[in-house]
Structures are given as C-alpha cells and as structure tokens.
Length: 305
Length: 284
Image 1: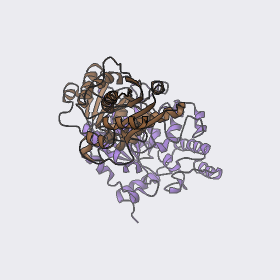
Image 2 (image 1 turned 90 degrees about the vertical axis):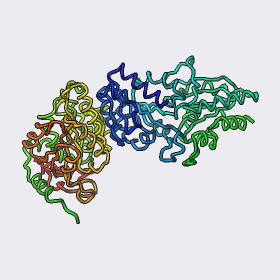
Image 3 (image 1 turned 120 degrees about the horizontal axis):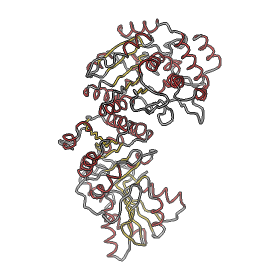
Image 4 (image 1 turned 120 degrees about the vertical axis):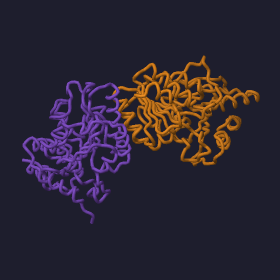
C-alpha cells in the first residue's frame, strides 16, 4: 500500500506541476524516480519533522499541493503543533502520508505504534482523515486527494494486505462503502479491519447469522447519514479499529449515535487504554486484543445473546 | 549571576543609546494606544520591534495593500507572533485594513487578536504565536518562489527567546544546506525573554557563530538605528548562495524608560489608565 501510494504521488506529480513531495529520512531509494524526473519538486529534509511540516505549509500557502511522508507517529505526535497551526489553521493542501498506521510496527514497540493517530488528527478543525484498506482503494483515493480542500492525514497499512476493496463500489472522500448486507449485526470498519470483518462475516454466515459491513475509509468527515441509515436496520453495531478506543472510529460512531438519538447496542472493538507493547506481528497483537476475525465473530455472538 | 557577554553588551549599549525620531515615537504611541484599548498585550516585545518593522515596510518589502495576495510580493512572517501590535499598526497605516480595527484589538468579534492570524488579517502571511514555526513556513515560501523563478524574498522575524526552540535550528540547517538566499531571518535580540535575561535562561551566545556554522551569512546591527537597518536589509542576500541572518540588537521596551529591560513589562494583562499615561508621556 505504501509503495502504491508513493507511486501514485509520482504519477500525479507528472501530470500536475503544483505537486511537491517532502520526505524526512525515508528508506534507501524511496521514490528515486520522482527525484530523477522532477528534482525541483522533491525534498528529503532529514529527521526534522517539525521543519518538514512547516516547510510543507509554506509551499502550500504559495498554492502548491504537498505530499509529505514519514512514519505516522513522527507526524502525529512529534509535529502535532505544526500540524494544528501550520496545516489546519491555514487549511492548506498538505497530505501527510503516515507509514505504519495502527499496529504495523508491532515488533518495534510503543515508540512506533500509531494507535492514537486517528484521535489526534480527527479532533483538528479542517483535517480530513483517510484510512484505505488496500492498495486498490489507495489507487481510487489518491487522485481525489489532489484538489480536496485542506490537509489530509493518510493512514497507511503494512503493505501486501489482501485486496478486498471492489471497483464496483465507488470510492469518494467522506463517503461510506456498504460491503455486505445483513440485519443481525452491522460491522463498521476502517483501514485493514475490513479484511478481518469480511472473514468474520463469512464465519457468522455459516453459523446462520447475517452480518452487514459498512467500511468507512474516511473517518473524518464521517458519513453519518449512511452510518445511521444502516445502523438503524441492524440489531447491533460493532466497530472495529486498530486504534485506541478513545477518540477513533468507535468514538466517532458513538458520537453520531448520541448526537442523533439512535438507540442501538454499540460494541466497540479496539485497543484498550494501554501501551500494547507485546511485540510479535501486527496480526498477533490484533488477535490478542480481539480486533481480528475471531474477535469480531465472538463479539457479535456474545452481544446478540 | 550570569551576565551578558561582552560582545552582546557593547551592542546592547548602542541599542540603549539609539535616539528615536518622531516617526518611531509616533508608531510607539499608536502601539501603546492599541495596547491601552485592549488593556493588555506584550508591551516590551512590541516596543523592541518597531524600527525593524518600520524599515522593512517603509523601504525594503515589495507589496501591494490593495492586492495582499499578489504573487510577486515579498513575504514577511512575524514568527514571534506576540509582537503583533506594531505589525498591526504598520499594516493599518499601509492600508491593508481599516485603522479602526486597531481599537478593537483582542475584543470579541474583532479582526485583530493577540497573535497574528493569516486567515483573517490581510497582510499577515502566516499564523504565528506558538514559537518556532515561522522559519520553516518561510523556508517553504522561499523554496516555492525559487521553483517559479519569482524574485520574491522572504523575511522571517524571530524573537531571541524563540531561538530556544529546536525547530528553529531544523529550519536553519535546511536553509543553510539549500543555500536559500532569498530567505532572511531577522532576530529581534532584545536580550530578555519571559522569565529572565536570555543569557541567564538559555544563553544564545555565540549567536552569530551559530548561524555561520549553519551556513548562513550573518550581519549584526543596531536594531533601533533606522539608517543602519535600511542599509543592511537592502543588501539581501548578504552573500549569494547563502540565507541571510540579521541579528538586530534591540532593547525590550525601547523608548519608555520604565519599561526598558524590565521584565514586568513583557506581558501585561491589565494596563491601567495611569500606566498608559506614563507610557504616552515617555513617548511624547
């Protein structure tokens, strides 16, 4: 997904001279074709996230569209003040591409886990938060990112995630994508929890339970209309996110229910208020925390009783 | 107690001795009037900035108040956003917005807040207030101008206390490596920050050497000497292929004896009528 995203930046930049790229200290040969073909619009600024974000704002205040890339937490935590003031307050077209959203860096420990990034970005005025589920969804999203007003936080998954998104289900920033119908439970996902939800829904179907899936690749602005519409038709709603339970997808859904008076049983699956520094793989930690297919299935069955 | 290093002390004495002409006194009176309207504000940090802003807006910067977004303009960012009052005075005088707005400084529903907001105020290039942001934003603007082969220049005004921020040095390193000679940094080196003298909080010296080692061309100047400021600013870039750093030696509270070098006047959240009258008398 990361490679696809960066390749898309290159492709888009070839067609649009206002597009620039800034990296911090990315991997060897990252986007070397961009540097080769458009050296004047390619910047590798070093391990200086505050300067990366500020400089991106300066370029964007001058009318450019800037894609900036580093590890997710180094944007959302290290450069938060720059994101708030330089990007959000100015409402500039800077797209922060955050590597390793969620538990991708599980083996590296808590310094690298981006498990509060959605909450931090979601509460900032003018910020848009997009978490694609696979490289095909990324491909559909990226062209729309160019002209979208204001900054965007793009949460990347690990890469080589199974492709489950569908061409026939159109992608639009701010719009939910209904993947499955089913009246017993509505599973609400963002990012790669869609893959887990699809597997869980299949297992549930084999057990005679119909679980629908609403995928929300855009966590902000949230497609409240579609969420409420589908939620009203399900007995329970289960949100699944690779993120702390505070302020992320589940929080956003709970807010929408509360604000609109929807009396629906809501179960939120995510990371509790801990540093989940268990190491191992992303999937192992997700399994341990119950945010995988098995955890979703069990949560649905438990809460339908 | 640690005191100012000799090199800085000599400059500071010169800045103390600088005589203010009628225009400088008038700009300060107007700044005091604005502060008095709001009954609050950063007095000392505003008064040290007056000549820097006056020279930039009277003689150096290219801009069109009728077209604040004219692409060919020079950009000026007040990174020490708490010194916004004299900037507002200057922008109003030049016609960026009606002067009546000055009377509503910090008032509910007014245009002008206690820190500059680029989304509201014509002529403000970047919102500032949280220190250490302006130089990176200015660097981005300077890079952008170069990409378009525009001869726009960018000036970023920093406080001396602001130079404590690590992000300032991230931007300094980047601009130095790039040889960004359409970018200028202006330090309002008034020798005091909120808590105490900069030499006692986190000494910046040797400041000029720091910028030189980061690849900048450096010029020190008496920040209240209008002629000297005009002369050095008009030499931008100081050296082709290097960004320019102007270390402007100033006096916090300059022009009002009771406020000069007086930390009581860094920020006032209640400026009484009597205090305002004292300020006017000193600036008469």
